[in-house]
Image (cartoon, rainbow, N blue to C red; front, top):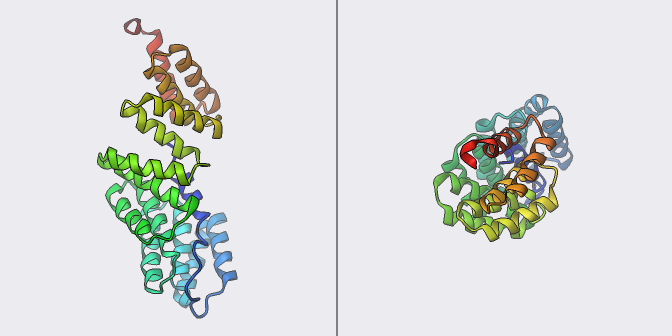
Amino acid sequence: MILAPLIFGTLLQSVAGPPAAAAEPGITQQRYENCVALATESPVLGANEAGAWRVAGGGYLARQCLGIAYANQQRWLPAATAFEQAAREAEIARDGRAASFWAQAGNALLAAGEGEKARAALDAALALGVLKGLALGEAHLDRARALVEAGDMAGARADLDRATEFAAADPLAWLLSATHARRMGDLPRAEKDIAKALELSSDDAQVRLEAGNIAASKGDEAGARTQWTAAIVNAPDSPAAKSARAALAQFSSPDAR
Protein backbone atom coordinates (compact mmCIF):
# COMPACT_ATOMS: atom_id res chain seq x y z
CA MET A 1 0.00 0.00 0.00
CA ILE A 2 1.29 3.49 -0.79
CA LEU A 3 2.48 5.08 2.40
CA ALA A 4 0.32 7.49 4.34
CA PRO A 5 2.69 10.47 3.95
CA LEU A 6 1.95 10.51 0.22
CA ILE A 7 -1.76 10.75 0.91
CA PHE A 8 -1.09 13.42 3.50
CA GLY A 9 0.77 15.43 0.90
CA THR A 10 -2.26 15.28 -1.36
CA LEU A 11 -4.52 16.45 1.45
CA LEU A 12 -2.31 19.48 1.97
CA GLN A 13 -3.44 20.68 -1.44
CA SER A 14 -6.87 21.28 0.09
CA VAL A 15 -5.61 23.31 3.07
CA ALA A 16 -6.97 26.52 1.59
CA GLY A 17 -10.30 24.71 1.46
CA PRO A 18 -13.58 26.58 1.66
CA PRO A 19 -13.11 30.25 2.56
CA ALA A 20 -13.06 31.20 6.21
CA ALA A 21 -16.26 32.68 7.56
CA ALA A 22 -14.24 35.42 9.22
CA ALA A 23 -10.57 36.10 9.81
CA GLU A 24 -9.37 35.94 13.41
CA PRO A 25 -7.83 39.16 14.78
CA GLY A 26 -4.07 39.31 14.36
CA ILE A 27 -3.89 36.49 11.80
CA THR A 28 -2.54 37.39 8.41
CA GLN A 29 -2.57 35.22 5.35
CA GLN A 30 1.12 35.91 4.86
CA ARG A 31 2.05 34.57 8.28
CA TYR A 32 -0.03 31.48 7.66
CA GLU A 33 1.63 30.83 4.31
CA ASN A 34 5.07 31.41 5.81
CA CYS A 35 4.33 29.03 8.68
CA VAL A 36 3.12 26.27 6.35
CA ALA A 37 6.15 26.68 4.10
CA LEU A 38 8.50 26.46 7.08
CA ALA A 39 6.63 23.45 8.51
CA THR A 40 7.05 21.72 5.16
CA GLU A 41 10.67 22.61 4.43
CA SER A 42 12.12 22.68 7.99
CA PRO A 43 9.60 20.87 10.22
CA VAL A 44 11.40 21.42 13.53
CA LEU A 45 11.66 25.16 12.90
CA GLY A 46 8.09 25.10 11.63
CA ALA A 47 6.88 23.55 14.88
CA ASN A 48 8.67 26.27 16.84
CA GLU A 49 7.10 28.99 14.70
CA ALA A 50 3.65 27.44 14.96
CA GLY A 51 3.97 27.17 18.74
CA ALA A 52 5.07 30.78 19.07
CA TRP A 53 2.26 31.92 16.79
CA ARG A 54 -0.31 29.92 18.75
CA VAL A 55 0.81 31.55 22.02
CA ALA A 56 0.55 34.93 20.29
CA GLY A 57 -3.05 34.24 19.29
CA GLY A 58 -2.66 32.31 16.04
CA GLY A 59 -5.66 30.16 16.83
CA TYR A 60 -6.64 27.20 14.72
CA LEU A 61 -4.45 28.12 11.77
CA ALA A 62 -1.41 28.01 14.04
CA ARG A 63 -2.56 24.63 15.37
CA GLN A 64 -3.00 23.32 11.84
CA CYS A 65 0.47 24.56 10.92
CA LEU A 66 1.80 22.71 13.98
CA GLY A 67 0.10 19.55 12.74
CA ILE A 68 1.84 19.90 9.39
CA ALA A 69 5.21 20.31 11.12
CA TYR A 70 4.64 17.19 13.25
CA ALA A 71 3.41 15.18 10.27
CA ASN A 72 6.52 16.07 8.30
CA GLN A 73 8.54 14.64 11.20
CA GLN A 74 6.32 11.53 11.12
CA ARG A 75 5.14 12.33 14.64
CA TRP A 76 1.71 11.11 13.75
CA LEU A 77 -0.13 11.18 17.08
CA PRO A 78 0.93 14.74 17.99
CA ALA A 79 0.05 15.74 14.43
CA ALA A 80 -3.41 14.20 14.77
CA THR A 81 -3.97 16.00 18.08
CA ALA A 82 -2.99 19.34 16.55
CA PHE A 83 -5.28 18.80 13.56
CA GLU A 84 -8.18 17.75 15.79
CA GLN A 85 -7.75 20.83 17.95
CA ALA A 86 -7.63 23.00 14.83
CA ALA A 87 -10.78 21.36 13.51
CA ARG A 88 -12.74 21.88 16.73
CA GLU A 89 -11.71 25.52 16.98
CA ALA A 90 -12.52 26.10 13.31
CA GLU A 91 -15.97 24.56 13.80
CA ILE A 92 -16.65 26.98 16.66
CA ALA A 93 -15.59 29.84 14.37
CA ARG A 94 -17.78 28.37 11.59
CA ASP A 95 -14.79 28.18 9.28
CA GLY A 96 -15.39 25.60 6.55
CA ARG A 97 -11.73 24.60 6.63
CA ALA A 98 -12.59 22.49 9.67
CA ALA A 99 -13.44 19.66 7.26
CA SER A 100 -9.93 19.69 5.81
CA PHE A 101 -8.45 19.71 9.30
CA TRP A 102 -10.57 16.69 10.30
CA ALA A 103 -9.46 14.91 7.13
CA GLN A 104 -5.81 15.60 7.95
CA ALA A 105 -6.36 14.31 11.48
CA GLY A 106 -7.81 11.12 10.02
CA ASN A 107 -4.85 10.66 7.71
CA ALA A 108 -2.36 11.15 10.55
CA LEU A 109 -4.28 8.66 12.72
CA LEU A 110 -4.15 6.10 9.91
CA ALA A 111 -0.39 6.56 9.72
CA ALA A 112 -0.23 6.03 13.49
CA GLY A 113 -2.19 2.77 13.20
CA GLU A 114 -5.28 4.17 14.92
CA GLY A 115 -7.89 3.01 12.42
CA GLU A 116 -10.97 3.40 14.63
CA LYS A 117 -10.06 6.95 15.65
CA ALA A 118 -9.17 7.74 12.04
CA ARG A 119 -12.62 6.68 10.92
CA ALA A 120 -14.25 8.97 13.51
CA ALA A 121 -12.19 11.93 12.30
CA LEU A 122 -13.00 11.18 8.67
CA ASP A 123 -16.68 10.79 9.49
CA ALA A 124 -16.53 14.28 11.00
CA ALA A 125 -14.80 15.65 7.90
CA LEU A 126 -17.38 14.21 5.54
CA ALA A 127 -20.36 15.09 7.74
CA LEU A 128 -19.67 18.80 7.31
CA GLY A 129 -20.56 18.47 3.63
CA VAL A 130 -18.12 21.09 2.35
CA LEU A 131 -15.29 19.00 0.89
CA LYS A 132 -15.27 19.04 -2.89
CA GLY A 133 -13.38 17.39 -5.73
CA LEU A 134 -10.00 15.88 -4.90
CA ALA A 135 -10.26 16.68 -1.17
CA LEU A 136 -13.59 14.83 -1.02
CA GLY A 137 -12.16 11.85 -2.88
CA GLU A 138 -9.10 11.65 -0.63
CA ALA A 139 -11.27 11.70 2.51
CA HIS A 140 -13.33 8.80 1.15
CA LEU A 141 -10.11 6.99 0.23
CA ASP A 142 -8.75 7.30 3.75
CA ARG A 143 -12.04 6.21 5.26
CA ALA A 144 -12.00 3.16 3.00
CA ARG A 145 -8.59 2.26 4.38
CA ALA A 146 -9.93 2.57 7.93
CA LEU A 147 -12.95 0.43 7.07
CA VAL A 148 -10.77 -2.30 5.57
CA GLU A 149 -8.79 -2.38 8.82
CA ALA A 150 -12.09 -2.78 10.69
CA GLY A 151 -13.20 -5.60 8.39
CA ASP A 152 -16.08 -3.62 6.87
CA MET A 153 -15.45 -4.58 3.25
CA ALA A 154 -18.88 -3.45 2.00
CA GLY A 155 -18.44 -0.02 3.54
CA ALA A 156 -14.94 0.19 2.12
CA ARG A 157 -16.25 -0.63 -1.35
CA ALA A 158 -18.72 2.26 -1.18
CA ASP A 159 -15.99 4.69 -0.13
CA LEU A 160 -13.60 3.41 -2.79
CA ASP A 161 -16.25 4.03 -5.43
CA ARG A 162 -16.52 7.62 -4.24
CA ALA A 163 -12.73 7.93 -4.13
CA THR A 164 -12.31 6.83 -7.75
CA GLU A 165 -15.07 9.25 -8.74
CA PHE A 166 -13.70 12.36 -7.03
CA ALA A 167 -9.97 11.53 -6.90
CA ALA A 168 -9.75 9.91 -10.31
CA ALA A 169 -6.29 11.37 -10.92
CA ASP A 170 -4.85 9.64 -7.85
CA PRO A 171 -3.36 6.23 -8.72
CA LEU A 172 -3.71 5.13 -5.10
CA ALA A 173 -7.50 5.24 -5.38
CA TRP A 174 -7.43 2.86 -8.34
CA LEU A 175 -4.77 0.65 -6.76
CA LEU A 176 -6.72 0.17 -3.55
CA SER A 177 -9.95 -0.32 -5.47
CA ALA A 178 -8.28 -3.02 -7.58
CA THR A 179 -6.82 -4.71 -4.51
CA HIS A 180 -10.21 -4.70 -2.78
CA ALA A 181 -11.89 -6.15 -5.87
CA ARG A 182 -9.31 -8.94 -6.15
CA ARG A 183 -9.70 -9.87 -2.50
CA MET A 184 -13.47 -9.98 -2.94
CA GLY A 185 -13.16 -12.20 -6.03
CA ASP A 186 -14.29 -9.55 -8.54
CA LEU A 187 -11.49 -10.03 -11.06
CA PRO A 188 -13.14 -8.06 -13.92
CA ARG A 189 -13.34 -5.01 -11.65
CA ALA A 190 -9.81 -5.62 -10.38
CA GLU A 191 -8.46 -5.76 -13.95
CA LYS A 192 -10.26 -2.58 -14.94
CA ASP A 193 -9.06 -0.61 -11.94
CA ILE A 194 -5.46 -1.80 -12.01
CA ALA A 195 -5.31 -0.83 -15.70
CA LYS A 196 -6.22 2.72 -14.67
CA ALA A 197 -3.60 2.70 -11.91
CA LEU A 198 -0.99 1.55 -14.42
CA GLU A 199 -2.04 4.30 -16.82
CA LEU A 200 -1.49 6.89 -14.09
CA SER A 201 1.61 5.45 -12.42
CA SER A 202 3.27 2.66 -14.38
CA ASP A 203 6.58 3.18 -12.58
CA ASP A 204 5.10 2.57 -9.12
CA ALA A 205 6.31 -0.76 -7.70
CA GLN A 206 3.18 -1.22 -5.63
CA VAL A 207 0.97 -0.82 -8.68
CA ARG A 208 3.08 -3.34 -10.59
CA LEU A 209 2.97 -5.76 -7.65
CA GLU A 210 -0.81 -5.67 -7.54
CA ALA A 211 -1.04 -6.01 -11.32
CA GLY A 212 0.99 -9.20 -10.95
CA ASN A 213 -1.25 -10.42 -8.14
CA ILE A 214 -4.32 -9.92 -10.31
CA ALA A 215 -2.71 -11.67 -13.26
CA ALA A 216 -1.79 -14.59 -11.01
CA SER A 217 -5.36 -14.77 -9.72
CA LYS A 218 -6.47 -15.20 -13.32
CA GLY A 219 -3.91 -17.97 -13.89
CA ASP A 220 -1.86 -15.75 -16.20
CA GLU A 221 1.67 -16.80 -15.20
CA ALA A 222 3.40 -14.84 -17.97
CA GLY A 223 1.54 -11.66 -17.10
CA ALA A 224 2.25 -12.09 -13.40
CA ARG A 225 5.95 -12.62 -14.06
CA THR A 226 6.11 -9.49 -16.21
CA GLN A 227 4.44 -7.28 -13.62
CA TRP A 228 6.36 -8.62 -10.63
CA THR A 229 9.64 -8.25 -12.48
CA ALA A 230 8.73 -4.65 -13.28
CA ALA A 231 8.03 -4.02 -9.58
CA ILE A 232 11.55 -5.20 -8.74
CA VAL A 233 13.14 -3.13 -11.51
CA ASN A 234 11.21 0.01 -10.55
CA ALA A 235 12.11 -0.06 -6.85
CA PRO A 236 14.52 -2.90 -6.06
CA ASP A 237 14.86 -2.13 -2.34
CA SER A 238 11.19 -1.50 -1.64
CA PRO A 239 8.77 -3.70 0.34
CA ALA A 240 6.84 -4.16 -2.92
CA ALA A 241 9.95 -5.56 -4.60
CA LYS A 242 10.47 -7.95 -1.67
CA SER A 243 6.90 -9.21 -2.07
CA ALA A 244 7.38 -9.50 -5.84
CA ARG A 245 10.51 -11.63 -5.38
CA ALA A 246 8.64 -13.92 -3.00
CA ALA A 247 5.78 -14.20 -5.48
CA LEU A 248 8.12 -15.03 -8.36
CA ALA A 249 9.74 -17.79 -6.28
CA GLN A 250 6.51 -19.78 -6.36
CA PHE A 251 7.04 -20.44 -10.07
CA SER A 252 10.38 -22.08 -9.43
CA SER A 253 9.00 -24.29 -6.65
CA PRO A 254 8.23 -27.92 -7.55
CA ASP A 255 4.93 -27.54 -5.68
CA ALA A 256 3.90 -24.78 -8.07
CA ARG A 257 3.97 -27.10 -11.05
